Each structure stands twice: as structure tokens, then as C-alpha cells.
Image (cartoon, rainbow, N blue to C red; front, side, top):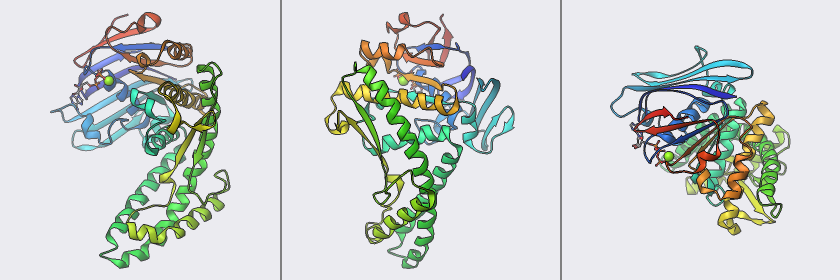
Length: 370
Ligand code: ATP
Ligand code: MG
């Protein structure tokens, strides 16, 4: 798949911008705070319906403007598509694909997928579980509409249950509503576990291959899915998963009421990343951490290719220059597969290495250089 043309209106620091991209490689350079990341963010919005940097759509509206529009001309599944997002102007958020209103944001993902990689992701290995869950969710929401729907429902139930737990000290009658929430959270939680377990199996496979190649066959990476303790087999059938999630909730009922927090469920899931048999989170060096994070992102790209049949857009934000020459070479050797967008600073030597188009961004204006 590829993004051929992008139009922005009062989005972040772009007033009005149209850009036509190269089908293979696009280098976007410019000084700090000119709009490089904003441009990639617009592409993420076009593939997921929301920003990767903020939960608030309002933040994306240019200061003093009424709303923003993003439109992309996309080629995927052997066809041309036009995806469009409109936010603000005193109206409800509007998403269309080929002028047809989308029912859910994930309709955008059936047309365009992105894998975004930025310097903070280099910490995917060392940070807390939330970063790794976000990585799982971002990939799976694009790949599996049923997962996206289950995640939205699960988050809604989780918020509601958390409110009940918070308020039930003053209103003990609320405790009687918990069993209903628990059952619905177990039902939707089982769907999340079903998809996550399968995704992580593929992730472990592809990331191990990438990591091994990148480390000259010296290191072995493995990734394991860690979910609710009572779940004996995350690949088990739906009924069994639901029963086991309910069992865990029962065991934690008193702890939840006394701590006023929702302690049981796959919102606590994590990935255990191991390098040569020991925990990468505890023991990996900086270089190993970088290689492992890079391997996970490139693995996500391969999984998209395996499931969708096409490579997603690879968005590399400021990240190539942070990698040493060996890892750079590893990434650059893969650029023939699918369309790539790379941001970097002015004096970067990278663009001598790259073919395709070069753009210069300055003060929210993009100009094609080559
Ligand atoms: P760096 O090299 O430092 O990463 P960048 O080119 O990636 O820089 P961006 O993150 O794209 O920079 O941001 C560019 C500018 O956009 C910032 O100066 C920021 O203040 C501005 N900006 C962010 N949101 C808005 C908005 N809603 N309206 C107007 N300007 C905004
Ligand atoms: Mg940036």
C-alpha cells in the first residue's frame, strides 16, 4: 500500500498543505519544531482515526482555527482510495472513505496501515508494561476490526467499573452491580487475549529473526505473552478463557473493593522480552535495547504483510540517525519493501544514502527538493 497524496488543512502548524509522495522512499528534513513529526502524525491519523501523540483531537487543530481536515489519496488492495478526516467546525468528527461515511474509525485501517517508530520507542524494552500494551493495541487495532471493537468496549467497561469501585465506599448498593460488569469484562477480555496471544506468537518469530540478523547471529531474542495468572492457555477456547478470567476476578474481589482499583483483567497484560535467556528489561545494554526495539517494530511490519498481504507505511521519526551504521544498514536494506517516510535534521548525511524524494519542512510549509 502507499500514500500518494496528502492534503492538510489547519492541522497542527500546517495552514494548508498538499504533498505528493514517492512510492518508495521519502526523506523529510528540516530544523527542530518545523513540522516533520506533525506530518507523520497526520499519516497515523489517516490509518487509525486518531493521533499517536495525544488522545485529544482538539490539540490537532491549528491554534485559532475552527477545525482541521486531513485527506489522503491511497493505493492499496489494487485500488485507489480517498480517506478523509474532519474534526471541529462545531460538528461531530467525520470520517469518510471514498466519500462514504465510515461507521468506525477502524474502517480507515482497512485501507491504510502504518508502523511508526520514534526515539521513545527505543525504550519499548525498558519502560513499564503500558508502552508494550500500546504497541500491541496499535498494531492489532489496525489488523483486526473485531479486536478494535472489543478494546473500545473493554476500556468503557473498565472505566465504568473503576468509577463504581471508587464510589462504593459511600454507596455500598453499587457493589451489587459488579458481577454484571465482571461478566462482560471477562467476555470482552477473552477476545483481547485470543488476538494478543496469536499476535505475540508471530511477533516473537519475526523479531527473533530480525534481532539475530542485526546482531550477527550472536543474540537470541524471545518474546512471551504475559496475561492474567489463572489463564492456563491463552490459545484456549473462548469459554475456557471466560471461566478463568471470572475465577481471577473472584479471587481479587476483596482486594479490588478495598484498594478501590480494578486489579483483574487483561488491562494489566505485558510482554516478557528475553535476550539469551535473561530478562531484557533488567539486563539488556543500550545497544541491545535498541536492536530489540527495532526488531519488534520491523516484526510488526512483517506481521502486517503476512495478515493483510501488503507492507504498511513505515514511518521513521528521527530514529535512523540514532542507530549505529550497522543497524542503519540493516534498516536501509529493507526499504525496498513498501513505502517509507524518514524524518531527519538538516545536516543529516542520510539522504545521500537514500533514493526517492527529499522534502524540506520549514515553518509548517513542505517543499520538494529532489
Ligand atoms: P523536531 O525536530 O524537534 O522533532 P519537528 O519538525 O518534528 O521538530 P513538530 O513536532 O512537527 O516538529 O512540531 C512543529 C511545531 O508545531 C511546534 O513548534 C509546535 O509548537 C507546533 N504545533 C503543535 N501543535 C500545534 C497546533 N495545534 N497549532 C499550531 N502549531 C502547533
Ligand atoms: Mg519531531
